[in-house]
Length: 126
Image 1 (spheres, rainbow, N blue to C red):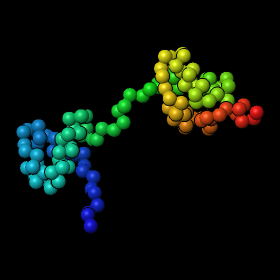
Image 2 (cartoon, rainbow, N blue to C red):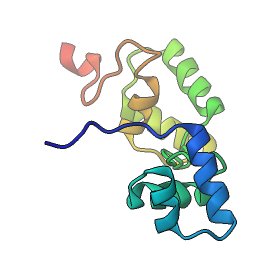
Image 3 (tube, one colour):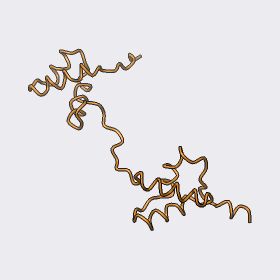
Image 4 (cartoon, helix red, strand yellow):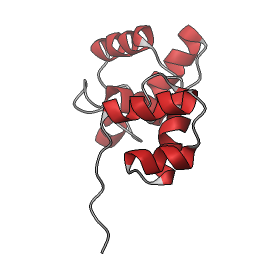
């Protein structure tokens, strides 16, 4: 049975990074601080990607910015029966930004209670 994973403190990460920058061998750093070699490698690798040594996550550029979201919300205020597909088309027309209907839905998930995925309410009533 493996021991539970322990979080490496920020102070220890800084020490590992500092020793590495001084030219110290990664294996020796691991031994000195009682860390697994792969943990030391990860700390050093992540520090080269960002300044705090934390894992880098979710740095994908967002398709829609705040002005697009506000535009979509205003369109829904005008006509709350618009589908995700219609909203995606409106964003394309107005801003020349091509997004999937599901992307529109993801952005609205927290701020709007319900956005139709496939059929409009009008189509369901007919």
